[in-house]
Image (cartoon, rainbow, N blue to C red; front, side, top):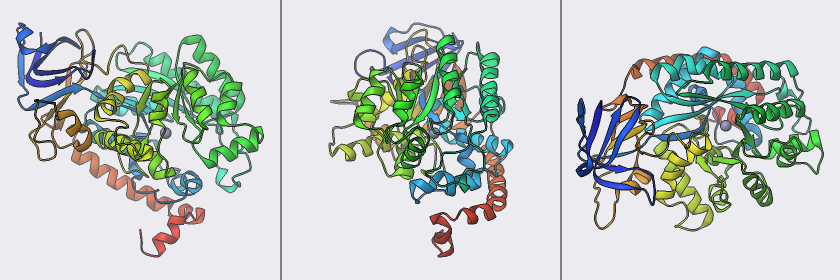
Amino acid sequence: MDLAVTNATVVTLDGDGLGIVDDGTIAVDGHRIEYVGPASGFDGAPDRVLDAEGCIVLPGLVDAHRHSGHALLRGGAQDLPEIEWMTDGLGPIARHATTADRIAGTRLAVAESLLSGVTTFGEYASEVGSLIEEVYEPLGLRVVAIETINEVVDDREERGPDEPYAFDRSKGENALDRAEALFENYGEHPLVTPAYGPQAVDMVSPELLRTVGERAGEHGRDFHVHVAQGERERRQIEARYGADESTVTVLAEEDLLGERLVAIHCHDATAGERKRIADAGARFVGCPSSIGAIDGVVPPLTEFLDHGAVVAVGTDQAPGPGGHDFFRELRTASLLSKTDATDPTAMPAWETLQRGTVGGARALGLGDAVGTLAEGTPADFVVVDLDVPNLAPAVSEPLHTAVPNLVFSGGSRGLRDVFVAGARVVADGSIQGMDVEAVVAEAQERAERVFDEAAVDWRAADSTLVSRADEGWL
Ligand SMILES: [Zn+2]
């Protein structure tokens, strides 16, 4: 036995309630958990002991949906109308980011997430393999690698919102080939699980949607789709398929509405359509900060829970909502759900923590492996020191206050250790194998270049932010 973490309050999320164990021990042998439970039941002889007095141990958090590379463009597109966000706000800048820039942005975003307890990442990107090779594998993190498949030609900003985007079929075929290469290269990898990422129904031809659905069904693979993202998408679908069609009807017609679908967002679907998605067995990921910032909308997390769906949370992207701190995302998920429902009992702390752990794992198709702490499962867990100003005090009688404290007041402060498959990837708050200062400095340098190179295009796109900047607000 390699290691035992002792003297901790352990939250297993296994069994009834949160599975809170006072004076708990978690022991690791190799990649797996050998023991988790009360100290009194542990009689192993570990090589190392990590004293976690005053700490809480919980399953590694699962950020089920994100585009980490955009972290380089943090602050570049927010406070503008939804119809402008992608095409006129972020797009003109993002087009100037190279693969190397996206790798640097991913490193930055991953650092932010690791320091807020994320061990499993739903990474959605074009050429996602480069991010796996350069960032995730060297750090030893668990990742679902979703290859973005998008066929929209690059001149789309010159078209009106009611004119269907022109498609470049070879662009889609190349992306599909990259996805297949991922399955080839990482099919048996212990930490990397590939998936298809047809970006959205308005951005991929029906022919390619069908191909993805067929292959996914044939080989038992998942596909993650941004579903019903808002007015821009709705107008595109109506322009291409007709006024009576919607993203959900097209998904159904192309035979994609089923258990292999991981549906992201869904806020612009009707209530009936959302039930239809859930009834089809699709999993749902809501990204409250992102959708709050871009759309001014609360994602339908509680609605999908009411329908009995698997529900998870994602940070999505940094430009707009600002970042990838997952404790902040959980707080946002809970608070927005409460205000949206005008019900303070909506999305309580325990439910929110479940969404950020076991819910995320199930949404990513990893529910049998991670998201809970149990004997025999991979040792993915985090140790948070509760003796810090934003988390203290924590009591265990007559109720445990540590979990609400974490969900409503957690952050990188207090984050002590992170383990993925038994490896200590954060030790005493320090990311192993990463010079965070150098990562930040590189991101700064690259961001200055990207924004500078994009300046002419950004002005030409003439989003609301251009005049705001000229007026001195930005
Ligand atoms: Zn997304």
